Length: 242
Image 1 (cartoon, rainbow, N blue to C red):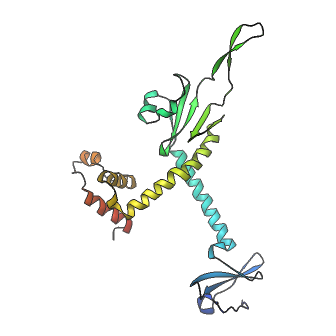
Image 2: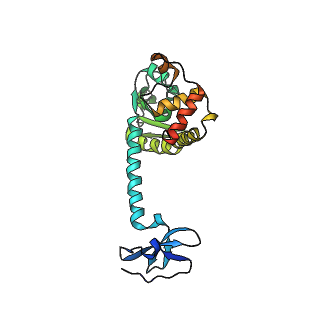
Image 3: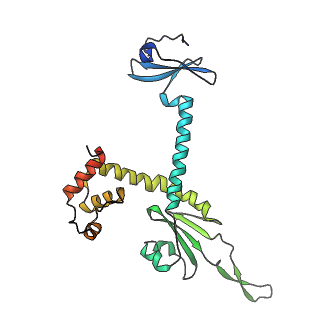
């Protein structure tokens, strides 16, 4: 199907042989910009040019891909969940902050996640003393949602863990994971900036079957890796071993 197209700054893609795409009542023609030196779609009858990724079928594919990736990412985050009920496990895991403001016995569990994040689960409701009509005193329980999440200076309570996990996931994705990705990319590009210990841990995290850290190397009867060896392996990881 031919398309009546002429523009002094554009030419039809594939040397003029590009086949137009019919989509939802409109015609999309792939064209080359002589000025920008890249491709666009010309949309008829709208008579406008759009970026590749703005084509509606591509945008929908990208949206569907993003949604799949988000589901997979959330599943990975939730898989890191551990419910700690033992005081010593909480302390050894570095989550003593989860106990701040609570007395012994008030916390039923600390739910931990990747990145050192946590949600506190209270046990029995808080008990307070109240005056009766006759002037006497009795104990009453405060109906407070058992799950509590604190991020920076904000705090939320919820009756179920799921409600707070969604909020925690968004924080992890934007604050924790994004920083991890920056460090990962930087270490891959400039390994010399990092210590030998940081490089061995990086290699270990990216190859669970290897023995890079001093402890694992020792357990296998191998000598600790030098920084030069670490940098060489990180560089090979970046180039695919070329």
